[in-house]
Length: 250
Ligand code: HEC
Image (tube, rainbow, N blue to C red; front, side, top):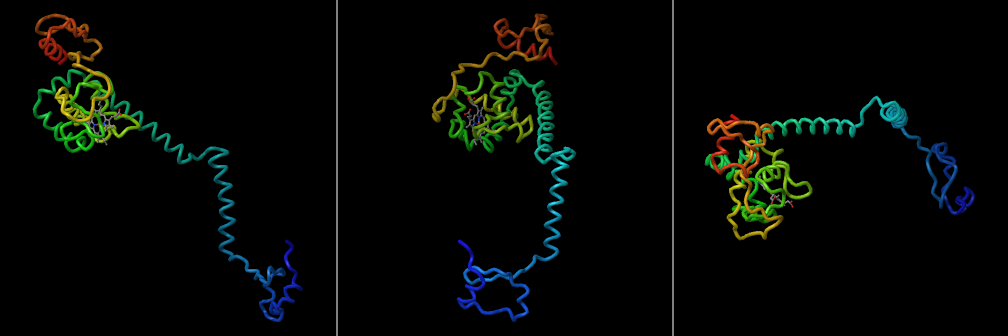
């Protein structure tokens, strides 16, 4: 549609403003009888506008052409990498001192168990129910296990969580000693078979007798019996060898 000319709009009764001193600021077109002032934007506004264009050119060269500047995303990736490194180192150090043995020994430590129970009540009961019989999270009192088959697997699940589920990585929320305490408490819940959530995962009838995770355990000799301490549980006699293994390692 071609815009109406001055002549036609004038015919339609647009007031003649040519005599007014605003005349100079009126633009020489009109649409449907509407005329427009030529109001230039203020100088400060245009200055900012041009400054942003100059700045964006500099930004583009600095960050994207030459690559002198690190983008927030790149900085985040670097920080994330450093965090993962530190976490890996910390976890390795923690794991060096924790084994199946730790949990079977801790299970007979009433102070540690009480501490674990208290943590369970405040941090875990909301999902696993106060007695551990399961709610959102699995029943921890049956002899089924979703992740792994050992006490260490329980500990690892508690510490590292299960990504993509409601189970958090509790190792990031509490000190390692607390994770050990609550994992020990969880281990002691097994076999109570409380009525609750139906079993999930694979049946794990009983945990293997603890074996030491030290790499050279095969070659250590028991201080008491003089026998070699082996990591093969079948070649050990119950009870005494575990104590021997621990005292030999200390
Ligand atoms: C917000 C809910 C929630 C809380 C709180 C929670 N869990 Fe869980 N937990 C889950 C869910 C869901 C799973 C099952 C994950 C899956 O599907 O593999 C789970 C799995 C587990 C498992 C693995 C069981 C198996 O069969 O392998 C253990 C052990 C466990 N939780 C212990 C704990 C402990 C200890 C705490 C407290 C420190 C805790 N959970 C707090 C939801 C929770």
